[in-house]
Amino acid sequence: MNTTLKLRDPTAESAPARRPRLAPPPSLDGRTVALMDIGKSRGKEFIDRLEDHFRKAGVATRRYAKPTNTKVAPLELMQRIAAEAELAVIALSD
Amino acid sequence: MPDSLLPNDGLVIVAKRDCPTCVLVEPVMQKLDRAGPLTVITQDDPTFPTGVRSVIDDHELERSFRLDVEAVPTLIRFKHGKEVERTVGWDRKEWMRLAGDAAAGDGLPAWQPGCGSKSVEPGVHEALIARYGNPGLKSREISVGNWDDPIEACFERGWTDGLPVVPPTDERILRMLGGTERKPDEVVGLIPPNLAPCTVEKVAINAVMAGCKPEYMPVVLGVLEAALDPLFTMHGLLCTTHFAGPLVIINGPVAKAIGMNSGVNALGQGNRANATIGRALQLIVRNVGGGLPGAIDRATLGNPGKYTFCFAEDESDPDWEPLSVRRGIAPGKSAVTLFHGEGVNGFIDQKSRTPEELVRSLAMGLFGVNHPKLCMAGNAVLVLTPEHYKIFKDGGWDRRRIEDALYQALKRPGRDLVRGAQGVAEGLPPSLADAMVDKFHPDGLLIVRAGGEAGLFSAIIGGWPGQSVRDECQAVTREIRP
Image (cartoon, rainbow over the protein chains, first blue to last red):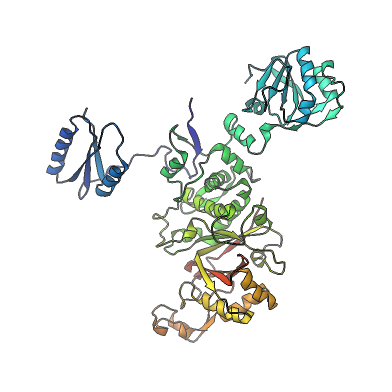
C-alpha cells in the first residue's frame, strides 16, 4: 500500500521541489575534512590513503569512526563532526 | 467511472441507521428488494437495513461522495449504467414514481424529510474531496515518504518559524478555504521581500500551518491586506535591525465570534485565535515572501512577538470608542489595526487615583519609548487595563480626552532633550533646543483597552523608528471582509 503523504507547498515555489544538494565548496583552504570510518572491512586502509592525500595537499583532517557498521551513527558523533569539521568523507570500501 | 457494485438497471438507496426517516422506510426497502434489483448503500451500519440482499458498507463514504448524496435516504434509479432519476427523503408519490407500487409504504406518512448525508458533514466533505475528488488546488505537491514524520519534513524544508507547524494536507487546506468566500486563485497581493504573488490558497496553506481554524480566514486575509498597504512598509519592518515586528489588534464582532482573548493575559499565551492569526502573517511573510531571519530580516535581537503578536480590544464598555472607530471604521464593523511593535513594557502605577495623576504618570512611562530623549522616532500603543481605565471613566474622561491630555503631557522643552543635554549624547538635533517637542506624532499614540480585571498596570508597546517619517510609514487599519 502506498501511504505517501502529500503536502502542498506554502512557498512562492521559486525553488525546485526537490531540494538540490549542497554545492561543493570552491576550495578546501582553511577547512577541516572529517574522515569517518563506518566500520566495514578495510575501511581503515581506505581512510589512511585519503588522509595521506589530504595531508600532502595541506588540508586538515580529523578521524572519526562509527561504533558498529550495523547501526546508524550515534547523534553525538554526528554533532561532533558538524562542530569540528566543514566537510565529511564517509568511507565505504567493500 | 461506472461502479461495478451498483446495478446497471435498477434502484440504489443511500441510507444510514442514524436517520429516523431511513429507519421508517426500512420496510419499503425490504419490499423493493423483493420486487427487483435493489442495492442499499449504508453509511454507518452494515447490518442496516435488514432483509435486503445487496447492502454495500460505505463507512468510508466513497460511494456516497461519488453519487453526490446530500441527504438520506436518497433513492436513485439507474438505467444502462447511468443515473436517470433521484429523490431525497421519503415522499410516497416520488418513490412510487421512481420505483412503482412496491414503494407504496402502506401505513407510513405521505412525506417525511430525510437527514444530512454523513458525506457532507462539516470537515468530512473536504476530506472526501481530498481523497476521492479533485481538490482543485494549484500549489505544488510535495511528497513525504512513508516513514517520514510530516512535521519534521516541514522543518527540513524551512517552512517553520522554529515551532512545529500543522502539515498542510489537501483536506486541511480545503477546510481552511471554506472559511472565506474569496476564490482560492485570487491574488491578495505581492509579499515582501521577494514581492511574490500570494493567492488566497497560499494564505490558507500557511494558515493551516500556523494552526488557524477556518473561521479565522477572513481575519488572516484582513491582516495580510493591512500588512501589504504601502503605508505600513512591511518590507522595511521586515529587514530592520530594530526589534519591531507586526502587532495585530482586532476590533469588532469577529473578535468575539472566533473567541479571541481581550481579557486576562490578552498579550500572552493560551488563546488559539490570538496565537495563530499573528503567526499566520509571519509564516506568509517567511514562506511566500522569503523573509527569513538572518537573511533579509536583519534584527539585531528581534522580540518574542515576532512569532506572533495579536490580541483583541476589550469593547465591553459602550462608553469606550474602540480603536478601529477612532481610526475611521464604522461602529459595529470588524477591523484589523497593524502596528510596528516591539516588546511589551509593563507599566505599574498603583497610587494614582485621578485622571490627571494617571496621565502625568503614564507620560513618564511613555517618554521611555525608544529612548527617553528621542521624540517622534517611534510611536507607541498604550494598552489600558480595566483598573487603570476605571480611574479615567470614574473621572468622566473618554478616549478623546485621555488622548488630548496625554498629548499635552508628552510635550517637553527641547533644551532637555538635545544631544548632550543631561550628560547623555543621544538626543534631538540642537536646532530644537528652543522648541516644545512632542513625544509622538499627533496620531502616533494608539490607545486600546485590554486585560484582566485585577492589576493597576498598563502596557506600553514601543514602535519602530521607521515611523519617524510620518508620511511614509504609519499604523494601518482595515475593515475585515467575509
